[in-house]
Length: 300
Image 1 (cartoon, one colour):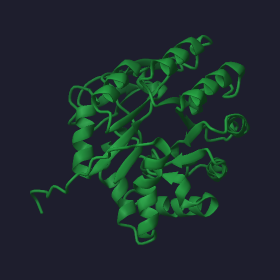
Image 2: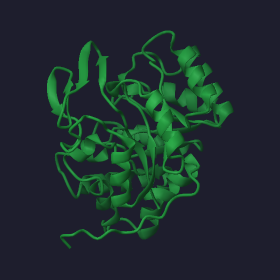
Image 3: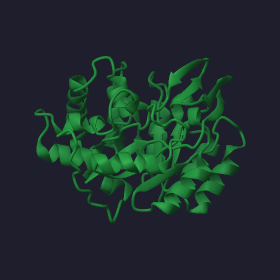
Image 4: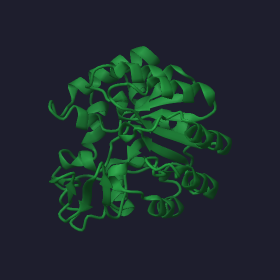
């Protein structure tokens, strides 16, 4: 059973980050901070990065379930993700997100937590100037811990937030925390983020790893080496696969975002089983996972 620990969904991008516009256009493109970029695969002609399109990709790639996180660059997607979780409860666990850039975020966060619609809360910490462990943030973590939710947390590549993250981890030992982007692997000091998984309540997921190793491209031998390095530090049982769908599949197919791992001779079958699904199943509490048959390509 394969589980994707880091993905994104939205119906439309229409937001501002650091004073710069991000807005859906067409053919999978978006205006992104001053330039037009291929945000999604070009077959998403209407700009809708929907659960149904993702499920088609998941079924084809035999991915049983996915965790949907959020990012400021996509705008708040809380309403849509609540609908997705309700409609497809065995396929998706979704994260709510408040606008943590605003001082009054705690009121929104409390409503998201109390609603019961979300399995976790996502914090794109790499885009935040607010301390991750300020009192209002710590208040939110306490509520999440009491509700049995998880925290999806991405940290800045310069590691200035490490001490803040350690404070959260030790203050709330029963709060499940997933560190995203594989610690910003390919940047200096990434292994310091990986070391956070030495705490019992912390895991690391690899969302965006193919983006970070894009310069070397498939089959991402550097990414395989990095996964082995991380496993030596914290154990393979602390690491999870994530795709960062859909942005990463502008260059590769969704299946390619994990099959470089399943085809690797550098990892054992047990390591692949843990990394690609079993660890996420246990950490996120997935149940009743669907078994998906292999569908032969016409070209085979």
